[in-house]
Every structure is written in C-alpha cells, then in structure tokens.
Image 1 (cartoon, chains in turn blue, yellow):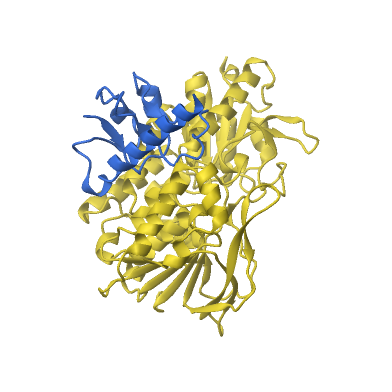
Image 2 (cartoon, chains in turn cyan, green; image 1 turned 90 degrees about the vertical axis):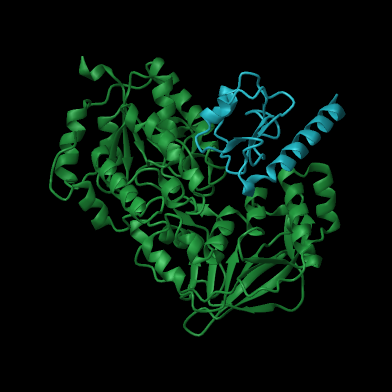
Length: 93
Length: 466
C-alpha cells in the first residue's frame, strides 16, 4: 500500500518535515515547488508509517485503500506526477 | 525584569498572521505576541474566504489555535489598527510590529457598466456567503436565469460552485444563514465563466477545475473549438507547461467531449479567450458584451490575450461577479508601494521610501508578496519574515520600546476599546457556533453580525483585557 495526498492539500509542508524517508515531493526550493498545486507521496518509497497523516493540518492524506470515493481519481494523478518526474530526471541526467 | 522579553504585535489574524505567530514562537519562544484583528473573530480568509463546501480545509483552524492562541499568544479582536490604535502607538508599545493585513479589496475590470446594480466583486459575494459581518446587508439578486463570472482562478471556481450547488448540499456547510435563505430561492439555471486567455492559461488548480465537472446534478459545457489549443499555447505547454496546466487542458478536452446535458439541472458553461467589454442594463445588469481574444507571445516571453477584431457577443444575464484578483490597500502611516500594492520590503523587512529597513516593522503574507499562492505558501513566507525579525533581535537592532510592558497597551485598549474581544470572547463565539451547528447537523452556524458576535463574546460590557 501507500499513502496518497488528495486535492485538499494546502502545501503546508508539515508532512515533508514528518516523513522519515523523504518521499514527499516537490520540496520547498525545488524548481516545480511554487507551481505545484499540491504535494505528492512517492508510492515506491513510502513505508506506510502514517507520520504524514498525523502531521497534515487539513486531513488531506489517506491510505490508498481508504480514499473517499470523490478523491479516488488522485491515484491516477499521483501516478502521472511520478511518471513525469522520473522522465524529467532521466532527461536531466 | 519584565521589560526584558521582546513584545511583538502582529496586525491581522488571518493565515499569514497565524503562521507568523506560530513560527515566531518556534524560533524564539521567549517572546510575548499580541495578535490584533479588526474583526471579533480570528483566521481571516480561512473563516471568511475558503468556500463553505470545502470544510476539510477549515480544519487548519485547529492547528492555528493549537500553535498560537493555545500556546500563549494573545488575541486582541475588534481592534482596527490605524483607526483605534495608530502605527506610532504600536511602535511605542512593541519591540516589533508584523503587518499581516492581506489584500482587502478587489481589482476592477475598468469597463462601462461595472457599477450597475447586479455587478459585484466576487470577493463581496464570498464575504457575504461566509458571514463576514461587514457584508451581511448586501442584497444579491438571483432571480435571472443566467449569471456571469469573470475570471479563471480559484475564487471564480468557488463562486461558481456556490451559485450552482443545490440547497440540500449548501445545508451541509457553514454557509451564512442569510446566504442559505437567499440561495434557496435562486432561479439561476446557468453560470457562464469567462476566461480572457485559453485552456492552457487558466489559473484554476486542476483539483478545482475537476470539481466543477463533477458536481451532483450540475452539467458542464465547454465548446470543443474553445477547448482546442492554439499553436502558441500548444508549443508553450509542450516546452514549459506545468503539471497543473497539462492536467487542466486534458480536463477541458474531457469536458468538451461530454454529450450535451439532457437533465433539467443547473449548468456551468466555461468560455475561453473571452473578455468583457461592457456591462449593459437599464438601472441594473441585463447583459454583458464580450470580445474575442487570441493568444500571442509578448516580448517578455509571456503569453497574453490580444483582442481580435470582430463582432461583440452579447450574453443576457442578471448577475455579474468579477474575480480578477485581490488588491491590498495602503495602511495609515506605513510606507506603501503604489505600483505593486504591497508594503515595500526585503524578505519581510519593511523599507522606507529610500530603501532603508524601517527598524522593527515587518510584513508577511499578501501585504508582503502580493495576492499569490495558497494557504501553505504563507508558512514559508512567515518563516522568512520571522527569521529576519529574530536575526534583528539577536543583533540588538531592535531597541526596547518606550512604553514597554503588557499593562501599558492593556490600559490603552481598556480606554479605547471597551468592546475588545479576547481569546475568551472568541472561544465563547466558537462554542456557540459549533453548538448551534450540532443542533442543525451542520459543521457550524455562524453569528453573522457584529452585534451578535460582540454580544456572544460578552464584550458589550466594558472590561479590560486579561
């Protein structure tokens, strides 16, 4: 499983500070941070510890099997985000 | 010695002020913070801006409360700095003053007919439906079948939802009672949203745009020709488009491909490359004239709309809400940058007209950077301002004020503001609103007039702050 951030995200970076494996992107200072409308959890790195869930001030983070129906689409958005990120990193490398 | 602790006044208890207070307590715990607020209630646009159907975001107030008011920061509500207490007086009582006053007015369209009854700033509608006490008396007319929203940002999305949600859904929110009653009688069938640029340039977040296409019983209509990108925008999207811009374009293509709505429910019509040129009506809004634009790349590389010659379209409507940006207003006796509508500042240190730091004066939030970013943007912004303040404190750059000590400002406020609202007053308001909400199975029922708020706060009887 993984945790997923939904569209209620306000980009308060409390989750980034809480994450023990540094898997939430983009980070403050990253080129795409300012234009990002929300933050995303990398499912390949997430260790399912729920520290970010506790830290989120607007309860925007859910386990992937517990996402409310109206937010289910974020799984695809999340996958697209990391697919693009890895393409961009490969291109930059 | 009591004067040894630095005392900081934060003017404005909205998200920027709250994040600044929390950040300052984290960075320099040994400090006294007074959070001044013009309204009897804290949290600014979190209470009075964020749309009532986005209750999850309003939970941020619990974090604000825990990190500020419940952590020793005082709330001094119903005090208008610049009117009740001057900037000079604040400077005499505090080691430092942080302005977090936001952007309180809206940008105008500067077109003929904008002043007609029925033409409003979206921010007025927002303040009205969110129970801002200064806007309670506004009378919106929802009797015509069509409303037009000008703008393509998240405020435009919010007001569009509020005009199309069913009363049943509104009842589940903390929308102000007077707004609920008026919207219940609404005869609006269609909301037309005008964007001056194209699908690739909308300022909606993709989450808010998607939401417009997934409202219960509300159709969405996008003309396929308007959803199609022009060559300039297509190139821009491929070369430098953001993740959000690509998602928005895909969402709009999806909306355009939907089969026309057959049910009788309300509908949202998103128009692109359309600018209003005139609002028409005999004594009140009856129609809006709209011009077509094309996207061109200007010399600075930005994509801009350019008017296309041709006939104007006329859209009949009874309500026009303009949502083309917030704008700050100058504060008495504090420098103001007239062109950018912010306090002139460097990383939050307010500057004199000569460009020198004005000792002890700081800015945070929209009054510092302009009305951009989302709630969390204010957290980093506040950390920047607070780190300057703490650096100045540690460098000894902030002399002790002449009237230092809490009891002196309290005596001043006791004389000038017998109806001051302290944290106890706010807690009484909060508890009453939540309790009323519970009895009606709603998240909260707001007290929406200043009189009710002050009465609940118990501050109609003179008493000093604690």
